[in-house]
Image (cartoon, rainbow, N blue to C red):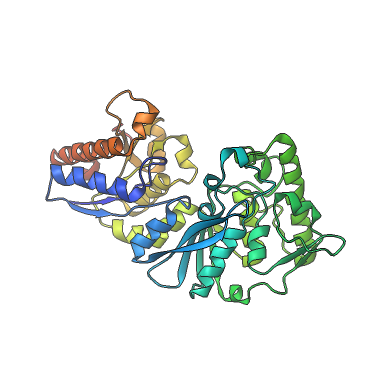
Length: 393
């Protein structure tokens, strides 16, 4: 029997490779004869570079770049096994976790460091890019990234804006792209983007994501005006419209900036990652696909990793089981995604703090893997096909 294990990470607890390892240990303890393939996944957020590097035999590169507030930070990006594809996580250089809570202010933060990672990857010969835009501390519309790539911004008096941030967007009157890195013309950018928020407006980057980055209501209004203004200047001077582009508001508008200055395409993050690691090829012909994440609930269906795995399993005719830290939802609803069953690893009532302890989670995952292995030895209907989707929960 061949089982493919393809979980996302358990956020705040274990990265996906460790989730895979623990489940595998438990399965093999129950039945050493199982053929097990591990395929850690991600959805474009934290851990994406490591997952794709491991899957393709690539390497991680560390660079000293400008952090969200302009102070130096050590950030990383991945170069995949093909030696020409770079995977860049916005969170690594411009992430919210890099800013102390008391200093969080999206009027002052910039994506310049993310742009520096792009330049570093270009310098190493990369011309294919996968950009994960989760976890940013910024709402600068990608202006900081653009500056790192050679773009210059000027105010209405002709003075250069030397450090573009959310606060300076309303001052932009002219955009000079004459020094934009010419290597971008020979490059392709794919943005792992799992939100549909527009750049500005009631559902835009500032109102929806600004508060979690430290924005007060007054800041949100200023940021939203700035993003609207930037879109107007871009359309007038560069002929590119991002005002109504779904997903343009991701990462405080960084997605829009990547579209404007790098001709990027916005793609569902989890599906992009599954394609890159070749999960379809690995899972075709398997007897069972096992996925999971820290919490499986209604939010999972908004394009998260386990949802994408369930969709793939249904397409290729392989039953999919989810093993999660917590399961909150209707099994019938899970079945509509393509999940045959969903199990929680929790042994009983426990505090969130306890559930997030890495060693406790490893033990519980091993036990879940063992229980699954024992169940399969009894002739699990998930594999034989006699069960109705959602019949196990």
